[in-house]
Length: 101
Image 1 (cartoon, rainbow, N blue to C red):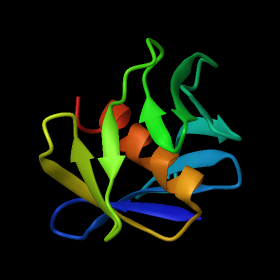
Image 2 (cartoon, helix red, strand yellow):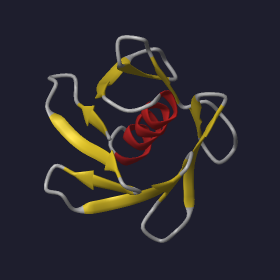
Image 3 (cartoon, rainbow, N blue to C red):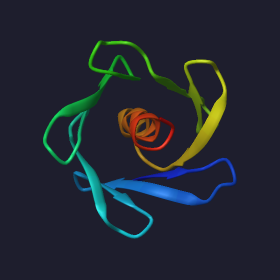
Image 4 (cartoon, rainbow, N blue to C red):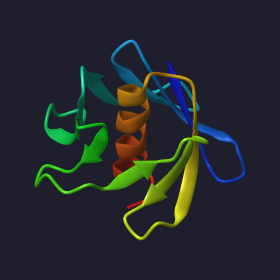
């Protein structure tokens, strides 16, 4: 399980058991392996070589060793708790698509 926090360290979203849930426990996206899908089943993010990428293959975020999520401009946009490296990368991608846009 991975929890995405905003910069104030408030929980926003959790990835667990194939579902991406908001703080109200509503499913807002799904994932399987290293692929994130919207609720219509369209791929919105993949993890390749440990990095979250959009469908064009561009790296959209970075996860630092301290759990911080940075956008493509190297600006801190959130924080992660828990999960494997790929789960954390997928969660960073979820953050970029679902909240930072």
